[in-house]
Length: 114
Length: 114
Image 1 (cartoon, each protein chain N blue to C red):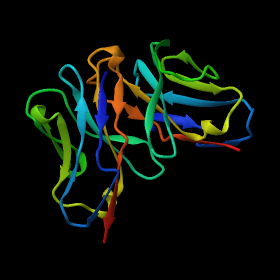
Image 2: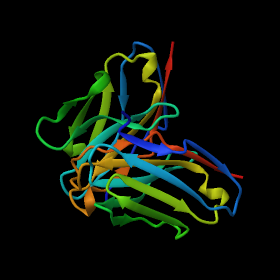
Image 3: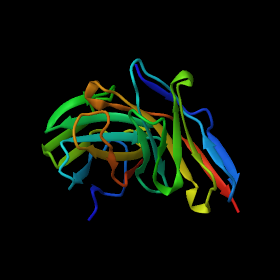
Image 4: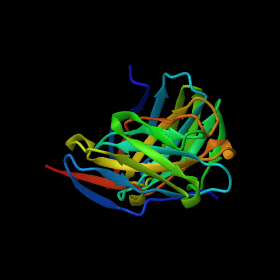
C-alpha cells in the first residue's frame, strides 16, 4: 500500500484556471506538508497542517489555499494559475511535530501551466 | 534561522568509486540533520538522519554520514557507488521548535559513469 499518495500525477492547464491537487496518507500521521520544487530542483516548504490545523504558512501567494478535511488528507487548491506556478508539488507527512520525525514524501504532482 | 548549503551542484563519479557529498548547515541549537535521495520522477526518500549520539550514522543503501559540529557539516559518503545511485541528493536541517520545520539544501545531482 502506498504510504503517501497524490492525485493527479500530471496536471496541464491554461493560465487563469483554478485547479486542485489531492494528498492522502495512510500512515496515521498527524502532520502533513506541501512543498514546491521548481525547475532547478529547489525544494521549498509551503504549508504544514497538524491535526487539521494550519501551523506553517510560508510566504505563498494567497491564490494557494490548502485544506485539510481530516488528518489523513491535505489538498491544495490554486486559483488563477500563473506560468510561475509550473513546478512539481510534493505532499509529505510525519508522525508529529518533533523535528526528529521522519518525513514521508508522496510521488509528486507535476503541474504545467501554459 | 536555519539554513543548509550544498556546495556541489553536480558531481560525477565512476561506478565503483567512492563518493562524498558535502552539506553545511546553520542552526543556533543542536541540529536535526537528514539526507534524502530523489530518483528521477520520484518523491524524496530518507537515507539517514542524525539527532544525537554517535556522530557517524549509517543509512540505507550503504550510505553513511558524519556529523562534525566544529565544521557545521554533515557530509554523506559511500565507499563504492553503483549506477543506481544516480539521483538528486538533498541535505536538510530540522528544527526542535517551529513545528519541526525542515529546511532543505538546493540539492546535488549525482551522475554515475559506467
